Length: 47
Image (tube, rainbow, N blue to C red; front, top):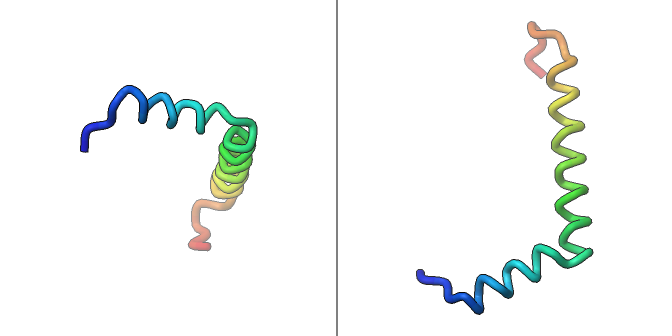
């Protein structure tokens, strides 16, 4: 599937929209939170 310049521009605009940025920010925050929990949990824990 070949994406034209116009389609790429629409995708870039979508990603630069405030709502999109907020979603990305929230997802990264949740991911970092989960990784921190995993890192701080005892290595023998299987949970």
